[in-house]
Image (cartoon, rainbow, N blue to C red; front, top):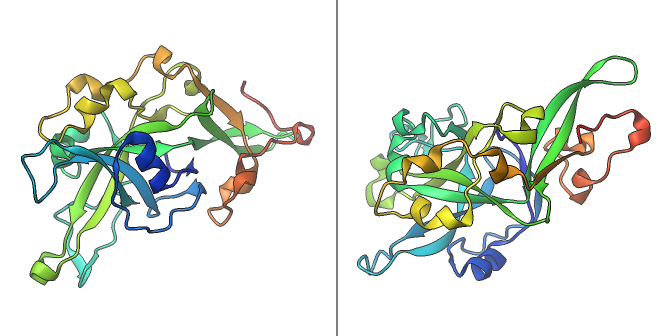
Length: 255
């Protein structure tokens, strides 16, 4: 699974790098070292211009709530969806047949950029007590990861034309492979650059093979390292969350 990650880019920079349109409306995204479900996150989509639907689709940077809200969700109050289980992850092997995600698999796929993600491993401390230690998975060259995601547009239909769209997303997960199996049996599904066109294409279904578990070679450049327990609390947020762990404290490394 993927329930916490870090991202230090901003929409303007991302738009320039990807030659995309920034549609985040200057929401002021700052580096976030402890992204958690329900946070506003950056996503990459490919869509046609509403006023010129026949023009080629273009890459767009959009802000979305992390935790997909199905279109059929009822409103708790005007413009506010009923709170339910936060759908921040979706199994890649079951999404196409799951009611909450199958429509998005067909035509609303996205990328979720991140510096890396966190997982927790239960280990024994110097006294033999079981403790959960956080690990951070990131590219060995310090580059950005792009994970496969799905997105949805929710509106309170009772408001008619006054209903404002609420965009939300989920990150697809798959079986862990290679060295990553030491951390968790699940991992977010990375989407290599060469598959972006097919994955983001709003006019055609994605090839089924893009939802398959990648080979160990495909994630061989992802490193895992222990990070400070500060990340355990979502109240903590800063570069110190990715600092080095004091090996003298008896903490164990998996690599």
